[in-house]
Length: 378
Image (cartoon, rainbow, N blue to C red):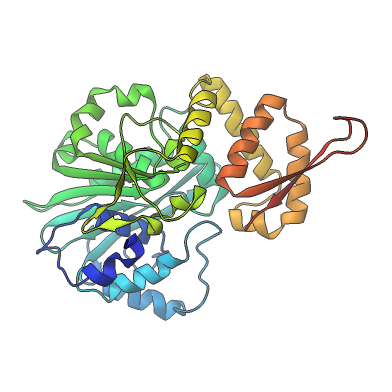
């Protein structure tokens, strides 16, 4: 069965005029948004560049065959995907504009978006998901207890600022946290913008609070919101959804978060009837642990969990991984200061989300002298 990373190979000759944007195209644009387009795509909408031109400049600056620094968990195949897009009839003439990329550690915000104007009259806004920065992942967890995180408000403001000509339709999408931002931004955009939005795509993005899911603004857009998660999802289950479609990935565990592993049939993802047993276990653990917490407990968990990561002095997952021995010691000290319940939950997320393998060594009598070593798995 073809995967999303093969989609352009056999569908790249179809123009958007002949076949309008679909759910797989949405994922392709959302994954493209991880590419660093700073200085290549303008931050405003006055002088857009074609995707072909953007890729030409990008690969002039970066050797197409070098290992480009997307980070520890962002699939490096996205660079190949970008090159494929530039050489396809379907994507090459798409006009890109409005590229923004903001990372602010004190404000705990990571936000990036780009606008793609498609031949045929559709305008697609791709909101970047969580990147390699630790602050980006912290903002993911802030979603669980904050009514509004800065990147959500920035998404709504971004959508309101996209210029639309008469008859143009606005579509929005994101992968990972970008999916959450896309939905939240669409729901909280001004009334005129909401009226122009015809579809919102969340690709394995975290869900929302019960209050937002029950709100009139969300319900009024629900039939335009399309939520996809793979059968063994973890990230997409970090917060609840009112409904979602399960798609088939040919990978396992956390690696299913990579949308390029999702299988496609024609112009749509291959559906699964429900979560796999692994996905159900993830959902059960997260639902019972996180959903059952008070707002204060979620805030505390976030502080404790990221206190562990930040105790290393690293600002990115790559840095966290590269200094694994030194960072292991720093995280060990941080973990040892936690109570058992907080430790269990923090370690569950740490092991699952960042693919960390635990090794327990017991010395002395029974639990006395127990030491926990975290070995970063890559």
